[in-house]
Amino acid sequence: MRLALFHRISEGATGAVYPGLYFDDGVLDYQELVKEMDHHSPQSLMVDIIDHFDALRPDLERLARRGRRIPFQEVRLRAPLPRPGKMLNCIGNYWEHQSRDPRPLNMFLKSPDAVIGPDDTIVLPNFTEPYVFQHEAELGVVIKGPAKEVSRANWRKAVFGYTCVIDVSARAEGRSTWRQGSWMGKSFDTFGPVGPCILTADEVDDPNNLEVKFWNSGELYHNYSTNDMEHRVPELIEWASTLMTLNSGDIISCGTNHEGLGPLQDGDTAEIEVQGVGKLTVGVRDPLKRSWPRGVYVGPNSTNPATVAARAAGQGR
Image (cartoon, rainbow, N blue to C red):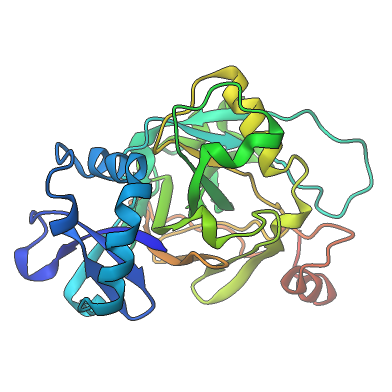
C-alpha cells in the first residue's frame, strides 16, 4: 500500500491537504476514514495515520477495491512527510564496488525545513562562493516509533515504510561538503525532496534488494542496487535508535552510491525512482544561472551501466 498527501487543483494552492492512496493512475481520497485524527498539520496527520495504521488498514483495503481514483491531472501531490521530526542521513554508506575495509557508520541531521515534494523546485542558494550542487539519490526509511535501542534482530518493528529522498548537497571541491560540515552543505531550504509517497513495509521483502535510479533532464545518472549498502538497514535502525529515540514520521536516508554524481543547475528536471515506491520529480532553479560540466563521477570498478558508458566515452571525471 502506498500513502500520499495531496491537494485538489480545483481548490487552489492554499486548499486543504488530503490523505490519499497512491496508484499508478491517480490517488484515492480517504479523508473520511481519518476525519477524527490529528489535522493540526499535514505532518501530524500522517504521523497519526502511521501510529494507527494497523487499525485503519482493513478500511483502506475495502476502500481501495471500490473507491474512485482521482486522476493525477486533478491533484497536486505534496511531500508525504512535509516536516519530519528528524532526518538522519548516512554519510557515504555504499561500497561502490571497491575492495577495502568497512568505514565506520556515520550520520548527520538534515534540516526538516529542507523538505519539498513532487513538482516543487530545488532553489540553489544565492551565494557566490565556489560550490557545485550535486544530487544524491537515496532510499528513505520511514520510522514507526517510539523506537529506542532496537536490536538488529527486531529492526522491522521500527520501520513503517519507504520513500524516495534526494539529498541535495553543496560541495566546495570533489566530495568535500561545503565548509566541511555535512549538515551545512545539505540543509539549505529545498535541499530535501521526499516522495512521491510512502510504500508500507509489508510490500518490501528486503530493503537491501531495491533498485534506485536518478535522471537529470532525462539523462540517467544514478543506477544502483541497495544490496551494495555498506551498513544495511537493520544496522542503521539499531545504531540510530541507540543514539536517540526515533519517532513516527522520522526518516533515515540510507546514503548513496556516489557513482553517477553530477551537478544540478538552472532549468534541470530531477527525477528519482526507488523500486516499488514510484518516481519523484522536481525542478531546479538558480537565481545566479551558474553552470558546471555535465560529467559524472566514474569509479574505476563501476558496474553502473551509465557510468561504464561514460567512462568508455571519456566523459567522466
